[in-house]
Length: 127
Image (cartoon, rainbow, N blue to C red):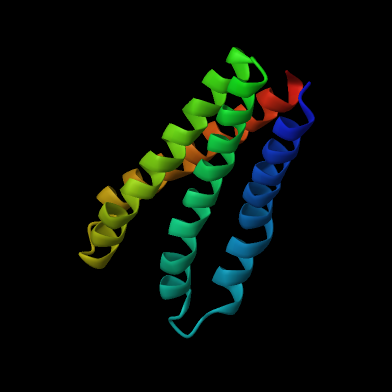
Protein backbone atom coordinates (compact mmCIF):
# COMPACT_ATOMS: atom_id res chain seq x y z
CA UNK A 1 0.00 0.00 0.00
CA UNK A 2 1.29 3.42 -0.95
CA UNK A 3 0.48 6.11 1.63
CA UNK A 4 0.45 8.99 -0.85
CA UNK A 5 -1.83 7.10 -3.24
CA UNK A 6 -4.10 6.25 -0.31
CA UNK A 7 -4.16 9.91 0.70
CA UNK A 8 -5.15 11.11 -2.79
CA UNK A 9 -7.66 8.29 -3.28
CA UNK A 10 -9.16 9.05 0.13
CA UNK A 11 -9.52 12.74 -0.68
CA UNK A 12 -11.15 11.91 -4.00
CA UNK A 13 -13.54 9.43 -2.41
CA UNK A 14 -14.37 11.93 0.32
CA UNK A 15 -15.14 14.62 -2.26
CA UNK A 16 -17.45 12.24 -4.13
CA UNK A 17 -19.28 11.18 -0.97
CA UNK A 18 -19.58 14.76 0.32
CA UNK A 19 -20.90 15.96 -3.04
CA UNK A 20 -23.40 13.12 -3.30
CA UNK A 21 -24.59 12.95 0.31
CA UNK A 22 -24.35 16.56 1.49
CA UNK A 23 -24.03 19.13 -1.29
CA UNK A 24 -26.47 17.81 -3.92
CA UNK A 25 -29.36 17.14 -1.51
CA UNK A 26 -28.88 20.54 0.16
CA UNK A 27 -28.79 22.37 -3.16
CA UNK A 28 -32.03 20.78 -4.32
CA UNK A 29 -33.81 21.20 -1.00
CA UNK A 30 -32.65 24.72 -0.10
CA UNK A 31 -32.10 26.65 -3.33
CA UNK A 32 -35.63 27.07 -4.56
CA UNK A 33 -35.22 30.52 -6.13
CA UNK A 34 -33.73 29.25 -9.38
CA UNK A 35 -30.14 29.54 -8.20
CA UNK A 36 -29.59 25.76 -7.99
CA UNK A 37 -28.92 25.47 -11.73
CA UNK A 38 -26.27 28.21 -11.93
CA UNK A 39 -24.65 26.93 -8.73
CA UNK A 40 -24.40 23.36 -10.04
CA UNK A 41 -23.13 24.59 -13.41
CA UNK A 42 -20.31 26.35 -11.58
CA UNK A 43 -19.65 23.41 -9.25
CA UNK A 44 -19.51 20.41 -11.56
CA UNK A 45 -16.67 21.51 -13.84
CA UNK A 46 -14.53 22.08 -10.75
CA UNK A 47 -15.70 18.78 -9.27
CA UNK A 48 -14.63 16.73 -12.28
CA UNK A 49 -11.37 18.65 -12.73
CA UNK A 50 -10.49 18.03 -9.07
CA UNK A 51 -11.23 14.32 -9.40
CA UNK A 52 -9.18 14.04 -12.60
CA UNK A 53 -6.26 15.93 -11.03
CA UNK A 54 -6.26 13.75 -7.93
CA UNK A 55 -6.27 10.65 -10.14
CA UNK A 56 -3.42 12.13 -12.20
CA UNK A 57 -1.42 12.60 -8.99
CA UNK A 58 -1.95 8.92 -8.21
CA UNK A 59 -0.79 8.00 -11.73
CA UNK A 60 2.40 10.03 -11.37
CA UNK A 61 3.13 8.72 -7.88
CA UNK A 62 2.41 5.15 -8.97
CA UNK A 63 4.84 5.46 -11.86
CA UNK A 64 7.52 6.87 -9.55
CA UNK A 65 6.88 4.11 -7.01
CA UNK A 66 6.79 1.45 -9.75
CA UNK A 67 3.20 0.40 -9.11
CA UNK A 68 1.82 -0.22 -12.60
CA UNK A 69 -1.54 -1.57 -11.40
CA UNK A 70 -2.35 1.62 -9.52
CA UNK A 71 -1.07 3.73 -12.42
CA UNK A 72 -3.31 1.96 -14.94
CA UNK A 73 -6.34 2.01 -12.66
CA UNK A 74 -5.91 5.68 -11.91
CA UNK A 75 -5.36 6.49 -15.58
CA UNK A 76 -8.88 5.12 -16.05
CA UNK A 77 -10.11 7.56 -13.40
CA UNK A 78 -8.31 10.45 -15.13
CA UNK A 79 -10.02 9.54 -18.39
CA UNK A 80 -13.40 9.20 -16.68
CA UNK A 81 -13.00 12.63 -15.07
CA UNK A 82 -12.01 14.26 -18.35
CA UNK A 83 -14.90 12.65 -20.24
CA UNK A 84 -17.35 13.70 -17.52
CA UNK A 85 -15.99 17.24 -17.73
CA UNK A 86 -16.35 17.24 -21.52
CA UNK A 87 -19.97 16.03 -21.24
CA UNK A 88 -20.99 19.08 -19.20
CA UNK A 89 -21.69 21.46 -22.13
CA UNK A 90 -23.84 18.86 -23.93
CA UNK A 91 -25.68 18.07 -20.70
CA UNK A 92 -26.37 21.77 -20.07
CA UNK A 93 -27.52 22.27 -23.68
CA UNK A 94 -29.90 19.32 -23.44
CA UNK A 95 -31.38 20.76 -20.23
CA UNK A 96 -31.65 24.27 -21.69
CA UNK A 97 -33.35 23.01 -24.84
CA UNK A 98 -35.83 20.88 -22.91
CA UNK A 99 -34.49 17.63 -24.36
CA UNK A 100 -35.19 15.63 -21.22
CA UNK A 101 -34.35 12.23 -22.72
CA UNK A 102 -30.92 13.44 -23.87
CA UNK A 103 -30.37 15.18 -20.53
CA UNK A 104 -31.21 12.02 -18.58
CA UNK A 105 -28.82 9.93 -20.69
CA UNK A 106 -26.00 12.46 -20.37
CA UNK A 107 -26.60 12.87 -16.64
CA UNK A 108 -26.60 9.09 -16.21
CA UNK A 109 -23.31 8.92 -18.12
CA UNK A 110 -21.73 11.48 -15.79
CA UNK A 111 -23.02 9.60 -12.73
CA UNK A 112 -21.61 6.33 -14.06
CA UNK A 113 -18.28 8.01 -14.78
CA UNK A 114 -18.22 9.30 -11.21
CA UNK A 115 -18.89 5.75 -10.00
CA UNK A 116 -15.95 4.54 -12.11
CA UNK A 117 -13.75 7.11 -10.37
CA UNK A 118 -15.05 6.07 -6.94
CA UNK A 119 -14.50 2.39 -7.72
CA UNK A 120 -10.95 3.05 -8.92
CA UNK A 121 -10.25 4.95 -5.70
CA UNK A 122 -11.47 2.05 -3.59
CA UNK A 123 -9.32 -0.36 -5.60
CA UNK A 124 -6.29 1.90 -5.17
CA UNK A 125 -6.94 1.91 -1.43
CA UNK A 126 -6.97 -1.89 -1.46
CA UNK A 127 -3.78 -2.34 -3.50
